[in-house]
Amino acid sequence: MLPGLTSALLGRGAPLVTYGVDFNTISLLKFDEHNAAGSINSGDQMVDYAKPSRHWAANAAAGSYAVSPFAGAAGLYLNGAGAILGPAGDTDYDLQGDFTLDFWVAAGNLSATTGIIARSPGAFCPWLVFQNAGSLTFYASSNGTSWDIASGLNIASLAASYNHYAIQRKGNTLTGWLNGSLQNTHTISGSWPTSAGTPVLNWAQAPWSGYIDEVRFSNIARYTTAFQKPSSPYYRTLNGRNDEATKMLLHMDGANGGTTFTDSAVGANVSGRVITPQASAQTVNSIVKLGNASLSVAIGSLDRLEIAASQDLFLGLQGDFTLDFWYYPATSGSGSVISWRANGSQYAPLAISNVGSGALQLYMSVAGTTWDILGAPIGTAPVGAWTHVALEGNRQNTTLKSFINGNPVYSNNALTAQWYYPNQNLCIGALSDFAVGPGYIDEVRWSNVARYQSQPFTPPIAPY
Image 1 (cartoon, helix red, strand yellow):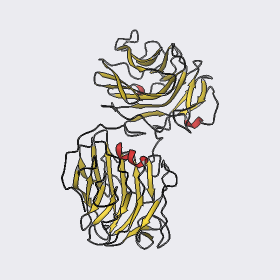
Image 2 (cartoon, rainbow, N blue to C red):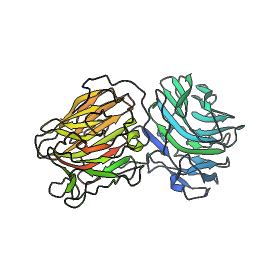
Image 3 (tube, rainbow, N blue to C red):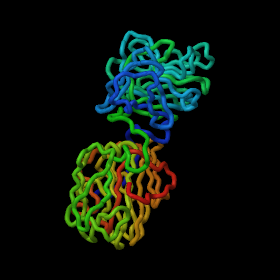
Image 4 (cartoon, rainbow, N blue to C red):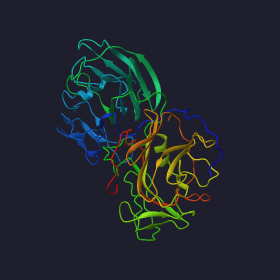
C-alpha cells in the first residue's frame, strides 16, 4: 500500500558531513585516552584513532587535559611551554592535493599572534594554521624562505569559546569554514614540500596557548555547501561490527515465543531504546541465521516491531548510513519488510518491501509528499533461504547502493537531498494496516557510516 505513486527526481538539498573515521580520514586526534588525567607530562602519548599504531607525544609539560566541546570527552589546553609532536616524516601530514583539516579551538588570548598547527616546528614550514589576534589564518611555503603560496589568508574569526573550524583545499581554491558556514575563499597555486619534518600542535616559532580538540586530517575536500557542525565527538577506529557508528543493533535473540527485544548497539545515543512487538511478532529458535533466535513475522499478519522515532537514527539517514540485516522469506507472498512510517497511507524517508517471491524494492521520500525513489529494485532474497541485505548511502559521492550477500546490485548517483524527519515509528515487519512480507529477520543493524564503499564484501558469519 503506497500513497501517491508519483516519482520525482532525487536531487535537491545539501550534503552533510561524515561524522567519524571513514575511508578519507588519514589522521584523527581525540585525546580522550587522557580523560581522567590532569597535567600534560613530557612523553605523554596521544593515540591517532585513524591509525592506532601511530602516536603523537608531548615534548614537555605542555599544559593540561581539559574540557572538550562534548560532555564526557577530553580536549587539550596548551600553555605555550611545550608542544605535541607527531611522527617525523610521515607523508600523511603533507596535505598534498585536495585536503580538509578540521578541529575545535578556543583561543587562550585573543591578542596573541601564535601558531596552532604546523607541518613542522621550523620557520617557513610547508603549511601553518596561525592565530593572528582574533583571526584564524593560513600560511604555506614552497621554498622554506618565504610564505610564497599563502601568507596570512583569513580563514575565520576566533573566540575564547570552542568553535568548529575547517580549512579545505580543492584544486587551487582554499576555503575557511566556521561552525559549518563558509567564511572565506582564496585562490592559491603551487605545492609545498613533502615529508618535511614533524607535524606539531603548538608551533615553536610562536607558541600558542588555548584549547583544542577533535583534530582530523582528510585527503579529500569534504565540503561544498554549508553543513551541520558535529554534534558529538568523531568516532574512533571502527571495527566493522558493533562499534561507535552502530546506532541500533537488534540481535533478535531470546526464548522461543519470546517478546523481549533489546538494542545492543554500543554507539546508540538513546539509552534503553524501547522496542515494542505488535500483533504476534516474536522470537523463534527453529529458523535462525546467527545467535539463538530470529524475529518471526507470519504471512498475512500485522506482526511487527515498532521503534519510536529518534534523532540519532535520523541523523544517520541525513549523512552517510548503512542499514543491513538478514532476511528469510518463508513464502512467495508480498508485504512490508522495514519501513519508517506507521501505516501505508504515509510516505517515509525509507521503506523496503517484498513485492513477491523475495524481490525487494526501495521507496524513499525526501519531503514526505511524494516518492522520490519509487520501487527501485534492490535485489532478491530467495524464498526459503537466508539472504544478507545491505543498503548504503554515501553523501561524499552522492551514491545510494544496495548489496545482496555482499555483492553490489543497485546504484543511484543522486543522493544529494536532506530527508525530512518523519516523527513516525520505525517498523520492522508489517505496518499497522499493511501486512508483512512473511518470514524471518535477524541481525538488524543501523549505522551512520557508509560501511562498504561500493566494494563486494563477505557477509558476517557471527553476530555483530
